[in-house]
Length: 140
Image (cartoon, rainbow, N blue to C red; front, side, top):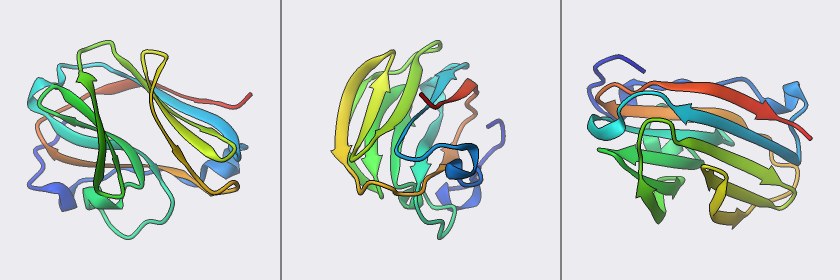
């Protein structure tokens, strides 16, 4: 994202249903931080139901804020993860009834989910510019 957002509710990017691509109860979405995250605030992850561009609408996500990474679910903080730098690889994996958050291949948090939940990629951007690259959808 390279715009100049004026608050959370004005800038979002989302995908179509991941199930349309064959992603159901066992898949992983991964991406790489490709630009300096120290001056950007964003949230990126998986959504279940779209109700708007606000950051609290992103159901399961990583949140970057001025170079720090945390996990948020539906607008609720779950845990701080680590400082974030260019080249970090982030992923969110659905494994049956568990959703896993990974940073550079290491699980940093997990949460239970209902099997069969239909997901899509969801995001919201608050400030600064951030570039993410190397998006992959891994289906075993």
